[in-house]
Image (cartoon, rainbow, N blue to C red):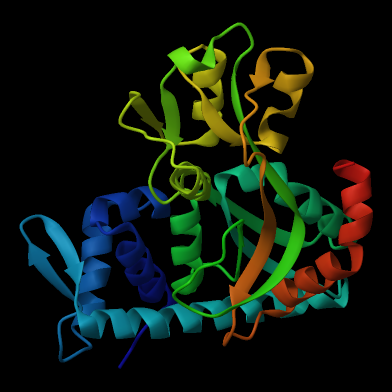
Length: 294
């Protein structure tokens, strides 16, 4: 069998993207070129890697097993590529982190301080919702994830970063009782905490219209525009509260207090760079908190 790393990379990207067209855009290759390499790769296996359902490519169970092996091989290969650079810098490599979207107010400060000490790090930070961040971790697409609510379907190691307070807010001159609730999309930790709050305090939702938006920033801008009221993390609205654009709606049981956590798979050995970052956070988080969050 004559596999090539190029074929591995193409196969992995097609599986991740779910289509040849999307993979071609990310790999800067033509679709025919990708199709040719996929065909050559498939010819080396007795069982199909993909099935076509209409125009959609679906990975078979066997294809998923190959994908896991290919991902592991490419990860090991990437680590080898960094070995030659370790002469100059003790910690080098690719650091991939997925974070719930509001984590953009937290994790960059930890990463920034880490990279000051280790400038030869290649960083990928994916800001998405909680469900996607956890799924990326579970699929081993990233080594670390930043969330405020732990997954309940698999075991993880965790390192608590900072406290996360959520307040109900509205536009300063608005009357909150007259406004609809604005929710994050399903899968968001903020959405989960908001629904839990309403359920715990027996606040009926059917008496008000509801609006659903797909990011905390979108929710914040909608509240600023006077479209409704919502529960948002304090760190995302601090400036708007200080300059009087938004006001806190005082309610029993608020603020909701959670914690931002950095998590990794319990049974997965971290790469040297990810392991170094976790150690750095444990050692320096109090100093970073004083520098940026007090």
